[in-house]
Length: 605
Image (cartoon, rainbow, N blue to C red; front, side, top):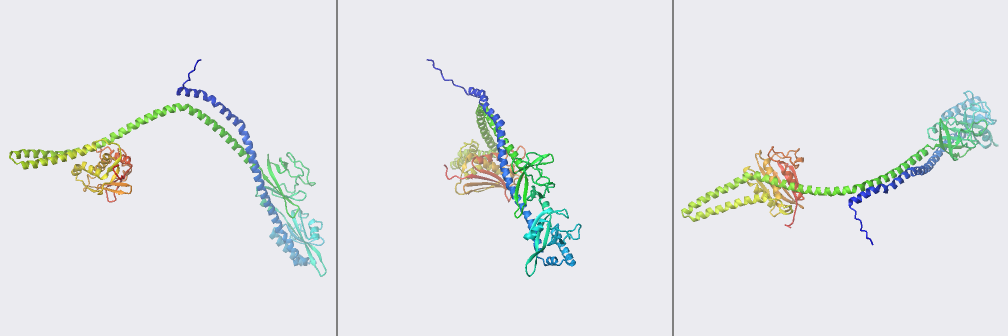
């Protein structure tokens, strides 16, 4: 039996296999995308367009019904507004007197009265007929032709008024040849035995004002009578046309007229009973037809609302749906292609990441080493600045020791051991002083440990002043300290905190070289969870333009060759490492003020 050992693939082999196979793996999603684009887009567009058209049609139908109701209300208001005029005149004593005794004076007076009323109402005519149908007074008495003397007993409105008390009719005037709506009211003459019809008051009004108001709307509005003849409309050319009795399928309309010698409206069937197609210019436009009966008469009001918004909304919905499907397909393909590219880059990114981590670690270590070297260099530079003063401080004790030693030899020769003992005691004190100076220098020069702990802020102030004692005395700088009686511990490192204070106090001394009064005040106080250490000098202060850049590396206000501009930058970084802050400002009473805020510690742990 042959045993086949399992194959172990390396990372590079796995990556190469994926690169070769992924085009095959992602070929199917590409075909799916093409199928979605070819089939899904038209299907989604058709479905979305249909739904949008249905919703838009329903909305348009509701709006059209509301608008039709408004038009019907306008028509009814127009009719009711004039209906009261014949009723009032039929009960007018002056009209009854005229019908009883039509004297010339009464006829003239009533003619002028009717003329004034018709002018106020903007009516076509207002006239009074006697019981035989002859007009005895009219508002157009002085016009040509005039209704006065004309007999209209054959008119339906006169017959209805005489029989039923009132009559209404829309017709073309036989005398004026002007169409109008006639409202007639019967006049009853009273006697002692019975009431008998004495005549009729008739008001004829046109609908030009109403049609003019309707013309501002978007709908095409028309009113037809019981015979289907249009007599009110806001479309020129449709007036006195008949509604088609059957809807033609194609344009132009070729329907038989509803009434002999009356043309038929050029309407065509638009696919449904409420869809009308009209030819307007060289284009065909579709409309929604809605109708309603006018209460109290044999009239029907119709409104045609354009279906263009429905088509526009359906088109927009179809395009949007197609765009969404296309976007989804393209997005899916892009994601698949992105996954392919991502897998191809995995190996390279892994190698690059490892290399980057190695370089970052090396750069971080190098940066920390450079920072430590820079900090140490700053301390050594400070020691170099203090070297001259330190040499002077050490030379004086050395000269005194030499003098006391020579005196001791002379005193021994003279046999004065007590005086020799005093000289040796002086020599011991001088050597202690020299040891304290060198011990301070040695502690300041050593490298920081990098470990934070509890540090006495007051002790750090004392060590810093001890290091700068000779320099401050040489430059005639007085120092005033305000330290708490009990130790105030802060989070930090003793050596680096001393370095910060030496830098701030040394800068204060340099800033006061040209000042007549040279004084430094150091204060330490506790504020809540923080310890606040301030260093203030009596110098000229810091220029306002320099304050934002005071802690920037290599920025200095000193003369060339008198500093690198790194002291404050290093001090700022040290205090931030302690978890505190270092700020610079000008004191209101003059001089610069540096404030160090450090976290307080309760014990040495």
